[in-house]
Image (cartoon, rainbow, N blue to C red):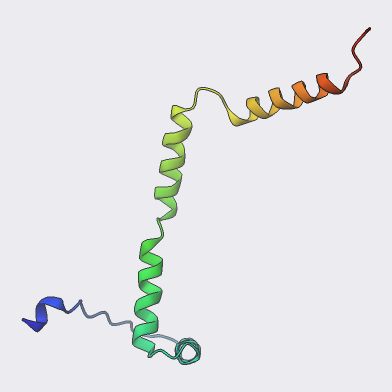
Length: 89
C-alpha cells in the first residue's frame, strides 16, 4: 500500500555543477534537503498560472468590458479639469 502514496520519480540530467552547488546551498540555508527544496520549488512553479493562461483570462475579461479603461480615465480627467476651471458668476 505504500506505493499508492509515492509520487513519480523525476530525474534531471546534465545539471551544471555550479547550479547544483547553488541549489544545495540554498536548501541547506533553509534547513532542507536538496530533494525537499526542489519539490517545494516545483510545487510553487506549478501553482502559478502559465503566461498563456493569464493572457487568456485577461482577454476574456476585456471581451466582457463594454467601456475601455482608457476612456474611463479620460472621462475622469476631463471631469476633474472642468471642476478646477472657474465658473462664470
